[in-house]
Amino acid sequence: MRETVHRVLPWLFVVLFAASRWPGLMPPNFSAAYALMFCAGVYLRGRMGAGVTFGILFTTDLALNSWYQFGLGYDVFTPGGWLYLAGQYAAYAVIFGLGRRFQPSNRWLSLLAGGILGALLFYLITNTAAWWINPFRNVEYVKTLDGWITALTKGTGGYPETWTFFRNSLLSGGLFTALFTASCKLTASESPADKGEEAIPAESAPEEATA
Image (cartoon, rainbow, N blue to C red):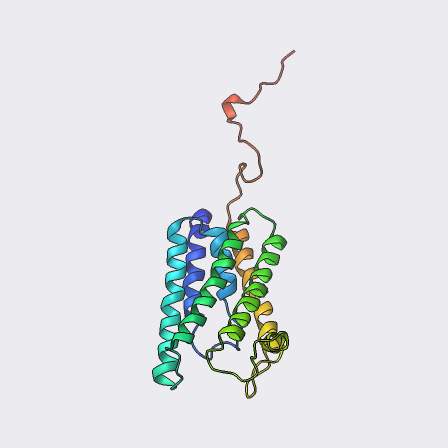
């Protein structure tokens, strides 16, 4: 039973992630996406795992962008918008690849650190892409070192400062990675192989010497 739960749990988190992307449900940049991509790399080792994870990610992104475009009136289906989305998926691929460098048997603290690192990488990659591509033509994002630092810390006028997005990225990356990996650790069935031991069949156990 525990082994079945352990196998189903990663897929359950993928479904919960899709539900968590509902607009306004969470604060800006407070997302399960970073933890999902990292943990998918750790636990969903086959091609199907990668395909389903990125497929759900793309489907929810397409639905969200359609809502912003046709429901809220934002012009997101532009060449710059698609290019920025490609930058986001490059960041997700980096996080997924980072997860591949870990194993489910790694210590919980190591997995937690990996999830937080993934969120940090996502923030750096996507904000650098936003600064370089500048799909919304923000006047603050000049192509200088000062402009890049502005994109990473202050952002554009009229919106929350980007350092708050950075804070939310780290908090959510750490929180969801902690919950996901702790759940998998608790439901994993511990076998002698997990401990690095080999089971000794009862019939092959050495007999006690008799006097």
